[in-house]
Length: 192
Length: 192
DNA sequence: ACTTTTCTGAAACGCTCATTTCAGAAACTA
DNA sequence: TAGTTTCTGAAATGAGCGTTTCAGAAAAGT
Image (tube, rainbow over all chains, first blue to last red; front, side, top):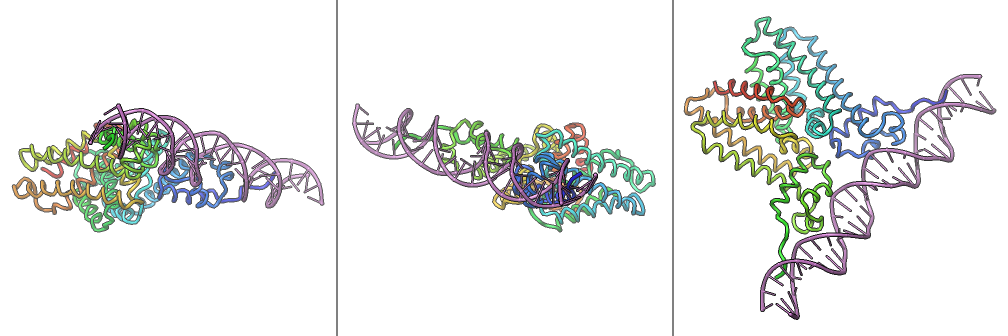
């Protein structure tokens, strides 16, 4: 036996995520990344791998974190409709908080059209959110809290596609009130 | 006097736009660009300028083209609601057609958070679409074709933010039927 | 304490990046 | 056609890119 890895991989990936999030995949240099991670590039290549593998880990880290958050939120809700309302509020709050937009959405536009591996990871992430929303919608319909005039799959896609646009608007205008209004409107439309 | 510029600047910018569209600002190299434009880099620097100035021209070119398209469409519609329906159909068709998503939206996520100049151009573009939709919505309300329960400004933002999400979904799943369903649902929600 | 294994830091790798230079070709005027 | 101006093409610039190398430091087992 001999010495073990010195740096905290989990922590280093979080630092790398911050860099990729701010600068994008192509905009972030290995120098930027190793500086933020506070490790030498040889250590990086010996453990995680090259730039693309590091990016993949960052995507996985980001999506898993969100997944855990969603599951916790759903567990604590009084009803399906309350959980959906909670979801809209959460999303609006996050949109307003993130200075550089959602990392997954950014990546969907910058990287995924030319990278099937990353595209696959983003699809998985999206599928999870889709299933999460579908379950809530179906439950709300069964409990008579929502009308069953539309199919749940489409409504879930609708919700997902709507808040993607909130990110774009907020990147351009930085107006929290604008986003709040949109979130309220969507909640009113769907849950009345 | 002496010789005049040999290459067609307008055409060259269109070629550059294609490259930026596909690869993004940071993903496109000057080599990629001059190859597609079929000019030498010295000619490029002598006329348009550096990479950033070229990108700026591409954004202007793209947004102006869309502006002209919108104005033509609005002029030929029978009523405000018909024009809005037309708009939804047009957007859905373009989303399905563009392999790499909307250039303006891509840029909003990749470049604008770190570049106020580009951000300003995208805001102008967005403002134009916003005003375009607002005018139609107000007219529809005045003509009794839409309910005036919500304010037109918010509804315009709502429409814009919704179809941004269609682009993301289509980039991930490439499913035209999914997009069509969302467009139909939005039209039904707003224009019933 | 010695050996063995593995990680680290600094330097170097070849390559591509955006940008500049400049000699000569091209096109205009007179 | 001669003279003038300006554009073009190829080559060169230095900096930065992602990645690899390797000597030596560090930590484990014996």
